[in-house]
Image (tube, rainbow over all chains, first blue to last red; front, side, top):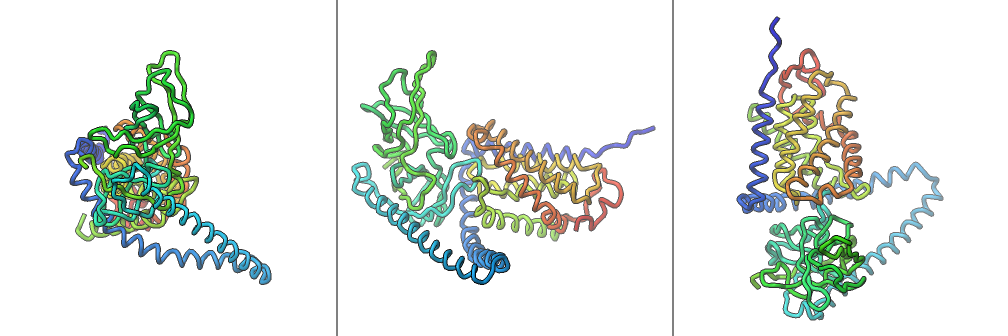
Length: 280
Length: 178
């Protein structure tokens, strides 16, 4: 008896799609498609930016209405009045705290202008509009883009020091890869001018330092700043991170150093784009 | 597929992208965003079989890649693998069962996120396996389980009458899951 034949079409389709995907990934990684993919991502963001704002404008009142409806039947009238009053006062306090925090960040940001490492740099202030568009990368979106002078690879600084660099510049928004992202590498100086490389390990993870020789006198609390070597991605002297732990292994050829970013990367609200490139 | 079918699929993918890039990015559960784009290849795999699951996964993945900082093409690669896998795994099952949709959404989403992290790390992004993968798998799988039925209805509206990739009987008839 002849066996029923299974269609080969799904497997053929899969093989073709896998090969096309791998080709796209390879070309993108090698820079062959860099301009194309960057352009497409920029167009997609520019198209979606107003849609996002529009949908947010529609959804937020609906969400507030639904929340109000749910609470309506749940409590008695007097409790409602008390809760409403309580909520109003809480909102007032939260709003004041929020405004105070925003003001503090803005003050600290404007104070950065007076620090020596920003003396000759032009800064464009920006507001953080989104955190981590992917669960697999440490990024933020800011409301400054090409139209405001931001371009690919420009450094972004904030309260405390270096935040990261722009990896996608759209018309009016940009995506910033933070220094904690696993793809982030920052050339740094420490101590009396020794050089090291600071590597991101992922969101909420400490940075690690490479090329620190064993028994180097690095103490907890020491500050690492950007090296600013020729061709470096960041201008010199920007504070990046503070040493948290140091350990010399018995066989290791490097000191094991972990560092905490100086900027509070979990609570960013305002940052500044440094209009600077390696050619500057 | 006719031009009308392509337009319908495009409209559904666009709708998913809008929801993902607006509502879902505002939601954070244990620091993780839901990812409804994963539902597209899963739904297409359940409705149309392995070939359509793979094709939907590829195109939906490419669109997702436009909005992600991870390597371009990675979502397309993982999407076509998951769509194919779901289509193959459900080929002999009663695809009209709601339980099958939910189980497919949970298993497909978990497979997607784990494969995404592993392939990403192989492709030069080692940090992708150092994230809290358990939290990501749980959040994405559970939210997609909740949204599986409406997602399958939308994809079922867009895809033309399901092709017979070895699927006999009424489970494959036009209109099922709609």
